[in-house]
Length: 167
Image: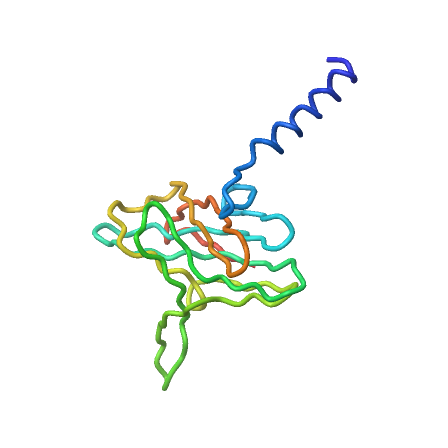
């Protein structure tokens, strides 16, 4: 292919990608890559994964790094999916020498900062799983931000035996 044809093909691909973007006002043109979503100009979700469920268990957890690229605080207010009827934001806290898990209404991500969701800290609890989640499976979560559009993240399921560190 000569350089003129390559330029025409590049312009055509750019044109098609622009017009094929989802016009739904609730969704943003987000890149879906194994546990990462980069939403234009304001939020990045990196190193995302969900824990494999144990046999007979209908609950799992998800971990990732949320990065705010904007000059204002962004608030994650909820998460949804097709495979779970309820996903909650949780935190482990120490009270009276006892580790306790509590539900949070939201996570605030300060301007130009990041928030780490990890075991024994902030994390997502995924409830009501009808089918177990298996190591290597891919899933999608829809992140809902206050005053911003949704971000869909495609993320892998990892075995509890697999070591995974978010940074």
